[in-house]
Image (cartoon, rainbow, N blue to C red; front, top):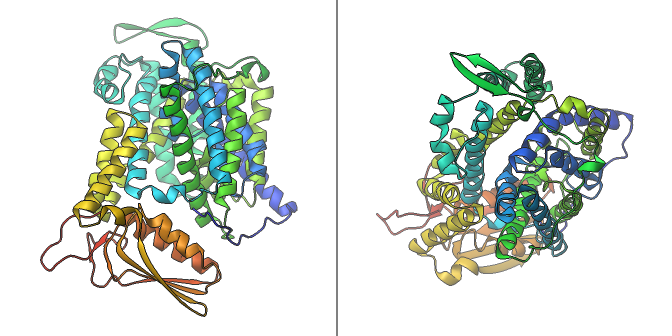
Length: 547
């Protein structure tokens, strides 16, 4: 993430061809966002309309403040765990009080994000090790699935914690509500089926998977008459269904506005959630913006500090109105690009369509079965915690897999903050085990030489995640140099995070018409066959561990 300004391609004035492409992509993203916003809000312990409020603010307001032109801002599955935790812990059994106190933590967390942006800390995401970040996201995916599978089956679980919820899945399968489970399971089949077929049938890529799920689930909800409380018999057992299995919305959008309760904002519990909203939200948003820059057909570069500012302002407004926290969301953003978005107008149109839909046809939203929303969240959770992610991490290196798995395990057993902290501590300990000094972890020894437009940075001792920001800052001082070399000959240790970041920087330099060359790794041993695996210079016959 850049803390110094980079050349960026300005938006062209939206001509006829531009706004037409953006209105189409904005509409298609709106079809994806509508059910996801509702589902994320309910899974977070917020009213369903809170998710819509956030997406409207993200589209109508934040789109004009940010720099990441093609990202879609709104509520994200990655923050469900934090939001639900805040509502539950701060409410002490009272859901409404917990909701309003959670809003207060979102508002203060948004102020922290704005301060981050003003201090130009867009490099924040570069500090966190890749294995820890992916472990955090995988744990979030598992937690989402552990909670939503019970909703999909139409069962209210007794457990609250992720590991207990997972253990209770067999019981819920035995006690499932047949009609609700049918809607949920078939919605899930449609989502995964669409994903598989869209890779082979090009036209299906233009049809949002969540829309197919809704086109099935809403008519089935009407067929099963979920709008009226009644019972039915299946296999000699009696089950009840009714409006509680449908989305419940207020009669109008203005009545949904809820103001925060700041009475407990300086308690230890609130401060914990403020830190999590600010840190996790910022990291996810920055990583998404960075990924979308790579996907942008025009290869435009975003000012990530400016985009973090837009996210903070959006969160401030959303929190004050009763909405969920927002980030630049990766699934909707990548869909936006695939649907042909050209500028920030696509995000604006997506927010506008949501606003118009909720304002004028809220009765249609009430027809959506909760089981279908649960299916969409499980689909999102599986993407975060995909088995492919575990295999991919193992291929990078066994030590990466150990840190990844440790982060997942601690997060499931405790919370996100503890999980991320535990993963970072483990990674630092592994570095120390492999010969890095405590001082060297945070203060790289860099010797610099410059001749004309050619700069060489010689890094000694270790190039690892904890000192990479210093290395990157040194590189930023030579924004005018056409050729820069990073010489790692004298390093004992180069971790996977630094290998990955340097690879990304090579691409950034290339897009600017410059060259970044990494050399001096001939005497280092890779910890796996992966090209970006960790490297260690070891005595002959000693391999050891690294990360």
